[in-house]
Amino acid sequence: MRRLAKRTGCGRGLCQVGGQVKVSTLTAIVVFGTLLHVAVLAVMIWIRVRRTEGDGVTSDGARVTPCAVCGMPSVGWQYDGLDPNEQINPLTGRAWSADMAHYRPLCADH
Ligand SMILES: [Zn+2]
Image 1 (cartoon, rainbow, N blue to C red):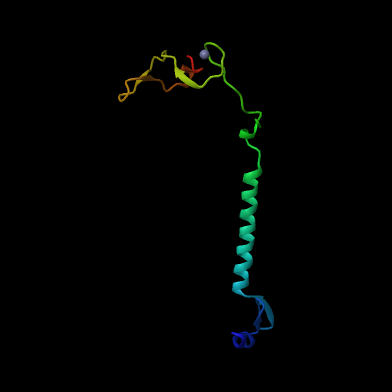
Image 2: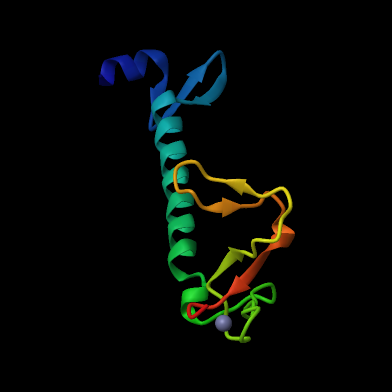
């Protein structure tokens, strides 16, 4: 190993080829792998410490849609049954509409 390094001019991750000093492939792999791991570590730390809605942070876009009947916070949308082009689901037998204007937000009680 030492003999090969002496013959090719390589040592400590550097090789002298044609009068130019070049980084050996092994050194390049180690440096690239280290940089990759540091980048992944930074992303993992950012994911762990960022504030999310679970921490009590709400964005300006978050809003509560009130129930169309009583005004309480809605939990879902329900078809109002007024679409003239109403469709019937053959599996469930329930009516539905392709027009979102015929859906209204409702709370858990309605
Ligand atoms: Zn309601």
